[in-house]
Length: 161
Length: 151
Picture: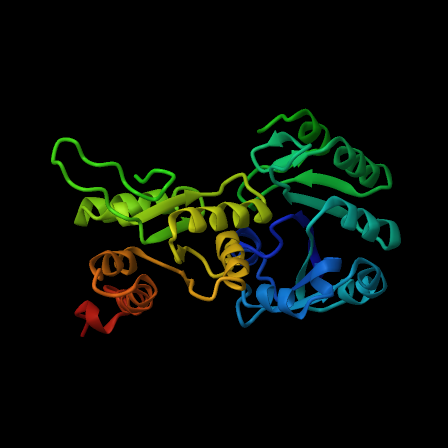
């Protein structure tokens, strides 16, 4: 089944990911790609305790994940790949094949402007998303499975469905 | 419900004294406000709880908000809704540097009701006791249940 969703979400492991997407997709594993988390046993334990016992979770730095992505994409189980920021996902997509990216949650922070209820972007982040799309990756925003996907153009324009 | 200092304002009509907040309740959407409202309606003791909503905040901002509120109110108990939730994750980071604090993840209404009546215990002790009450308060009735009156 391989990786069913590539999600950018600055909250990483949280309710929408584990329950909101995890239940309907019947996820069996999550690949969490984050340089800080990959370098810290304590951070990994924190996130490991947030997933149900029947779900596996793997931690990788961005560089490590690029090398391992083909293996996860060929995995017979149902998985989700998660990054906490756009730059990490862009790095992955530049180094390996990523069909589509789900912008699931980028929250309020200095320098960011609100585009959707759950997406705030800085000008640099907007540029990164357009870069992802121009390289052939389909970019949409969608917080939970029951909401309507928002195209990149509508996301940038702040057109909430 | 409570002001920024963690004390509910005095009820001018009754002359009741301000109540010191003893715990923070945080979770998705209106979870916290709803639970605290329910506690207050049932017991009149909702002022012991500080509801916090974090809808648009990053995990870092949630952590900063919860830590600031704990320090400013001297509250050392946090109730959250979901083991994997952002508030739980942020709270666990806070607890790493706050040895006298306790986090109860997966809190429900029976948990909070037990907590607000346990004024004879320290807040962390009351929270641990309340967690057990909340866990035991879930029951199943009706179809497929032995308690449902089936044959």
